[in-house]
Structure formats: structure tokens, C-alpha cells
Image (tube, rainbow, N blue to C red):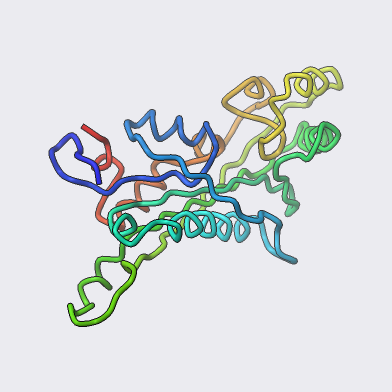
Length: 226
């Protein structure tokens, strides 16, 4: 638990992601989460739609980290997880496997619109269930629940020349980025316009996350440490 600016004791926050971009977004709001990356298989299931994929993976990542907490910590912690993919006419673009894969993605996205879909999940203590458990009932773990949402943002890349793509690939920035570009980095020059949440394209929508943590009685402003 942490002491917040208003003097109220609030849950600790864990970011179940190794993404420095998501961490920067939370820190920019004043949060100081612990970082505990989740190691889960991100392979899409047969017939799984992009929005279904990111929601499932966000749930799994949050659960994977929450399940590793001891009972005492789990009762006073909010675990935040997210997953982002590109949806190009129903085809999922995740992180490129190598330079050729990144080039393929950039060529496919060039001069077209696509959707960036980010799933967000928060696992926290379920106080409603805790209150129904009598002292005589055995309990080895505080009940938790998961709240999930999905943000969709339309992004248009400008028409890219072969030189544009070669230059960007040489920066190595495309690697590790869904769709092989980073809107907050050098890849910003490739983007023509967006419609929706810029933060969600980066990897985490703070307004959407605020609504999720608010369902646990802790909107983001109450989680800012003093």
C-alpha cells in the first residue's frame, strides 16, 4: 500500500509489462508502479478477432502477475496489464520477428488506414466477496476480480517510399513495436493523422485505465503517491 497526496492509503500498483512506453505514461501522471513483466504466450487462437486477442492477453498478463503475489500483497494491490496489436482489414500485425517482417508490415500499412487496438486489464481485490466471507471460513487467498476494456484508434500512415522504409528500418525502432512503428518516436514522421486516443496507440489509454481502476474505488488520481 502507498500513502497518496491526499493522505489516503491506497493500493500498491504493479505494471505487468516491460514496455517503457507504458511505464512513461503512468509516471507522467505521477504514479510510481512496480514493474513485473508477465511472460505469456501471445499466439492468436484460431479465428480469434483482434479485439478478442488483446482482451484475452491483457487478462492473462494481469492474472499471471497477480497469481504470483502472496495473499497479503494481493489484497492491497492493483495489477495493470495491456496488449496492443494492429488490425489491417482483420489481419493482426503484432511485433515483427525480424527486419524483413518489419518491412512487410510497413509496406502493407503505407498510404492506408488501420486500427490500433489496445486491451487493458486491471486485477484487484474484490471487496464485495471479501465482505461475504465469515471469519470461520478458511481462506488462503483474498478474492480478486478482473476489469477489462478495449480502445480502438484509427491511424493513417502516409505513402512511404522505399527510402523512407529503409531509413526507418535502419533505426531499429520498428523491432518490438506492434505494426513495426512507434508513433511516439522516430516513427511519428510516418503518421499522417489519427482518430481516437493517441495514448492507446502508444500502449495505454489513461482515461480508459482511470475508469477501470475507478471500479475498484481508486481512480488514478487517488493512486498518485505523496
